[in-house]
Length: 390
Length: 187
Image (cartoon, rainbow over all chains, first blue to last red; front, side, top):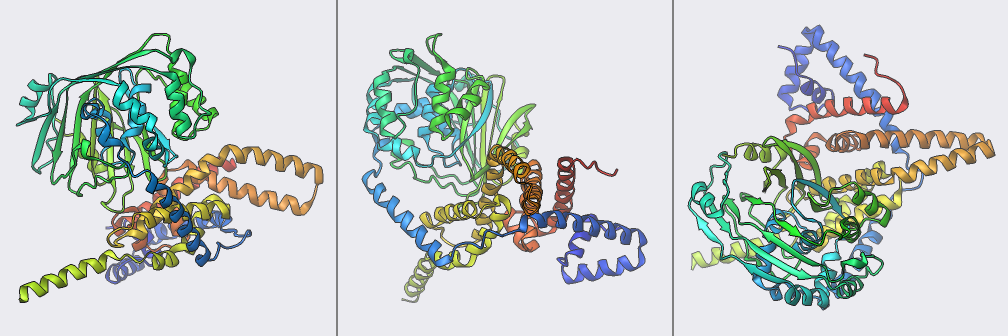
């Protein structure tokens, strides 16, 4: 038996536990083939180290003194705290509960991630027509949702001008079969999870609203983004969002607040680390006047997420807004990649979370149905569960 | 009585645990974090900004204990560092052109040396940004002196798999670097 490469590498790095180190050392004495492999590995590492040395150059000086840096952090944070006091959020409690049902599909996708439902609201109304694919856009402006939360104009619009109709209350279902008959589509559940589950069917709903451009511009001013231009013909456009019934399933120990009780954009729905959530939702359908310039609206949305006007224009041109669900993810605190799942291509978002451990969110669309799976762990954990749907 | 006092003790113990010592944590990691991120950004100001912002996140929402908090710190900061290479690429291309034009005009030897070093650095960073995200960060952290144990903490993986991942990362990197420098791989 020859020594495996990874072990050899750890041996060369003197990172093997004593016993394994000795074993490897003894084996190497008597095995020319492994000696050769070790030599090759050593050279390889040497070459790479040499290349990496190029970026060691610190000619511009060492970092600032840690005392000064620490003081800087405290000043920055205290300043932003002063601001926060003025906007201790009552926003979400004032939005009628049905609004959350309408947005449930998107909001549920957000579970496990820190981006707030607010961003999803913008997304629902501006981007979504009928979901066939998913793309991710990195979100930079972390304070945007707070600003939106502090905008009384936004609050007014959400609570008074959006007309919402819901088709019943959420209901528990005993199993996939019952959920299927209640929701009206074939519900599949992951067979790979052994923990206890609860399944809930969220009835569909419908939201209509007429766009008042002047008011939207006031909101943009409220959030310091009066630079963003929306197409003029948006004014008066009537938009309808039709959301079919969907299901959500929870596995393991889950604790979650009712949405309407959520009073703070930052409120962390910290899910205990064993909780896995899964949603299955037929695509919502958004109806809007055919002459609406979706590309321009999309551009505005992307600028709100922190893109420059040029980047937004470029991205917006290259995305099919009529079929693409855009998921904003917080830049830096997450990684994302495309992965094959359930016979289609999905997006895996890994979110770094030091309180609960890293979380994954896997989203894919199959046969017109959006699937979202969130839980603790790694890509392999996500795929194992996702590929076990039955 | 006994029961009560033991309960009080438990409560006190958990309260103590809640007192996460941010200042100490900061002092322990500030310089090292800046140095790691600098390797990625090649710019001290940017490296410090990234390090500061990552610390701020922890300062604002202190965790209950510092279990693997350092792992989180380096995981987030190196991800940001790598992102910044990607974001800067366009700017760098432009600057490179400027430097080239300047060098032709001044014809200074000193200057040429500096340009060569800059170009090497850019190529290393380009190569890092072209390979798998985790591989790139693994390499840079290892190169910055992280032990296998520490790397395992940063990436939430078993210590036993670090060797294999490093070998893989080195190969990915070398091949990406060779592509950029125009040297084809030997085999």
